[in-house]
Length: 252
Image (tube, rainbow, N blue to C red):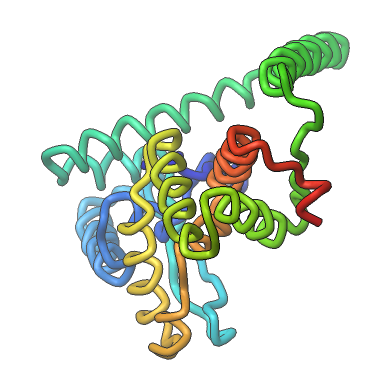
């Protein structure tokens, strides 16, 4: 299950109803009906629905304006309270963790400029140390480090997967390598790419996108929607390339 994207909106931390729908395995249209029902009940009892749900909009694949909601932490709690089983547990864990993380980040903004500077410096140094240790482990015994171009990661990944397939005996191994990479991405990120692909196709169907375009979607298109997924995918492809002795410089 992916982390929610939580952002600050007019002083409130919120997440998008489209992400919530995907995470809990519901059609977005179904979640919208549920939220509208909650709004009606809240209004009858003189509760401020804006403390839970904030009406918003987005452009779909056909550039049509569509309704969505921004859910506060309270809004997520209300959705989670109606859920049972594994999905409810995982969604609760995801939104609580992400909102708490963002709240802690906002707390640092209340520090004096001097303390903010030292906090930023500390975080930067810690990140550099972690990246240095990780890089050292990856390049041990490897002559050339595989470096994917993050601005064109799809093309670079295809080249590397093709080289790996060739090392296994030919083009027929391409799907096999691809499948192994997807499985490792799911294992590291705790994602279900097939489910996310199905949800994406359903969401685009709700938005009026043609079936032919929906059928052309692949798991890579799902990965492209999530920055964290892209990072995991790039890392996995790189690790597989190193394991197969493939060098991006030779692949180009």
